[in-house]
Image 1 (cartoon, helix red, strand yellow):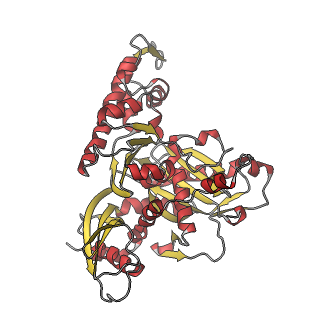
Image 2 (cartoon, rainbow, N blue to C red):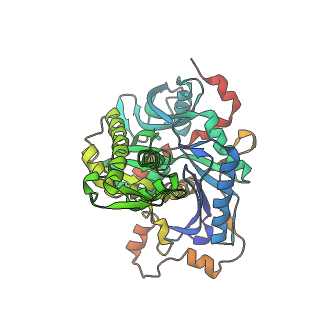
Image 3 (cartoon, helix red, strand yellow):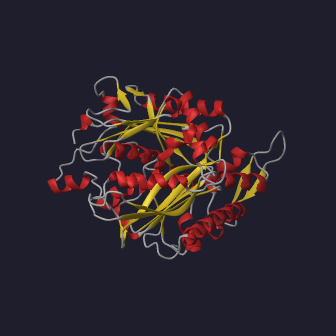
Length: 475
């Protein structure tokens, strides 16, 4: 791959506590170079749902401005946006279709028709099908077919994972991006984006649960046998821990957040019983002494509740004891001390922290080696998956989706001038000699399993913006 032919793709993660914009481009080894980074405090978003349009717009604009300031040669017009929220739900369904022309081999059109049939699945009023992800297929009497294209058969069927959400909640996110003078290339479910940045082929084969502990929600994506088995959004996360500390200890929200980050631990047994935190008194009141042990008990109670939800969702798909890859913790909440020990104790599975360094080139800012940026880097990877497979799309005016097939490389952001020293610094790659074999390994070429997985995550979010879909729901 020629570096100059690669587009610059921008991920935009709109969270409850932060808005992050990251611009990246793949180098000749298939690794992401970070060309721009911007972060702003989030306002107007609660548990992944936009509550105040104007405040959310200001947060997005601040993050984009900081991203451009980090590399003044960047110009950002289009972004990949992550989406989550407590309104997101998922369900499993099964679909079959008898082919009309059985003399021909199964092709992509047959798969598309099978997927389209699933839009007739009943969902509650007010919800909308966001994405339909095929898991495994059957062709006549042959089960567990991962890719039926090219096979012969009369009847084709599949198990599907259907993701639904509130139409208006998702429209509000897109409206905020639009009013920030940006085009939305695609909306991607956040746990799937996080999974892309912290998971490798071995994880996919062994079976893992990605648990992204964010500010407003905890997002889950469960993979087994190379298949996405389950997704879930748990409506408790970092903000709930902060509120518990604030109410339990009678301190200000900012003080509660600072105590959580600096002194918090997920295991009360590991806290020092003789340690105390001194909080300045308000308006002449005497200072307040806070026990570190009490702080840990409050944090552990909420983290146990979150992990109980994780176990509940794993039991829903009968994978609470069969995930040999264990649990990968990511998101800002994964930085909490002793979170791995608590997770292993409650779930009975192995756990580790997922850092988004699987696909990053060397020489980038060390601050991005942080689990809180997993979603945003995963959004860039999703953009590259679309680009490399010859398909990119964005939600256009009036909710129409425009499909583009590339003859010439297209940038989602572009650099106005030739590479400057500043840009080179941001995109530095270690100049170490590598063998041809090592170079091929670093190209980041996915295995067939990984490609099939991401090909299945087709992102049908555009249907949320087509008004006529209101009338297609079958009771």
